[in-house]
Length: 78
Image (tube, rainbow, N blue to C red; front, side, top):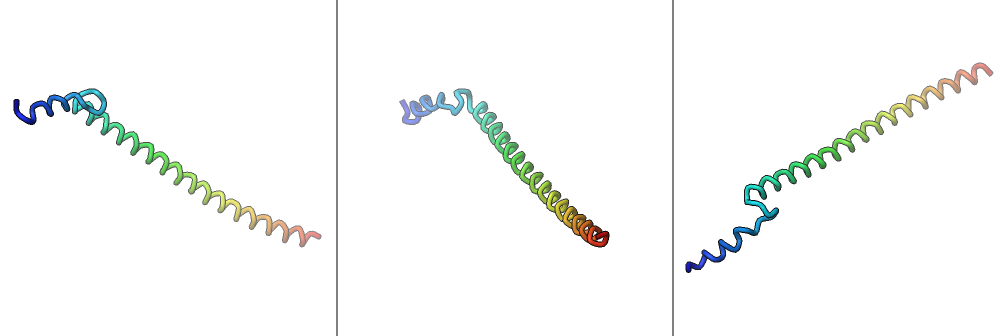
């Protein structure tokens, strides 16, 4: 019996997900795609939160200016 014959027969059934090599590669690619999609969703969500925060800060500044103007008008009335 040649040296490499027994080794290749033993390792033929040791696949990652119990199927063939093609099944292993397909499932591995699917896992990578899912991980990338989840990472993209997390990044997209953090950008949306940052945009909302910037908008809120602008709104707060506008409200402060409006309050200052109203105070001035109130002082003029008194």
